[in-house]
Length: 200
Image (cartoon, rainbow, N blue to C red; front, side, top):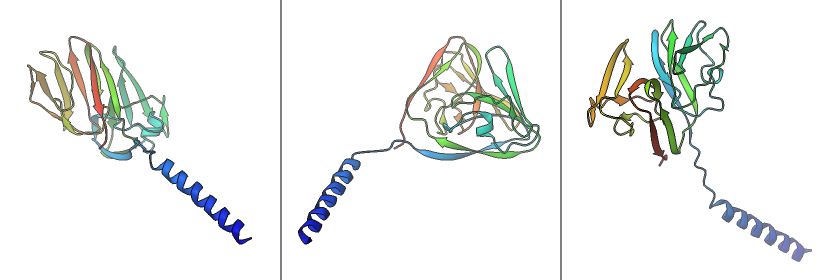
């Protein structure tokens, strides 16, 4: 009986050791976090900085104030959604896309989700578009590897007024993009904004 108990214990130990050794080579690259993004009274150019469980307005702004409105640029104009207890329509706002957020009072929205990683591509169409970084990293346009041709301009809406940065071989000025901030892009030719991003 004692021999059987020892054999059973040895078998369980061996199985546990094999399982732990197998698991020691399993690494999770998913990084989950949250970002607090301020919303001004009036209009704010903002973005979804994380890949949420659902990247729709009802998932991203569940505690919006009654009457808050989001405007998304579709290339030829705007589509809008207003909060009346829920967002109608429930538009998608994935990382990399920008939006106008109109609020009657200042607030802070908490985005919760996974940090996008790996090789990320954000298409930039010719003309005007609303864009944002696909990763939650506050950095300059040059550090973010934002693609540009001579004369391309980026417009930021800050403190209720626009400021701009133009590419003349380098960005002038080389503005820092905040996490959760979007901006207007004016470019004559389409481009691909490619980032290779990994959380260290």
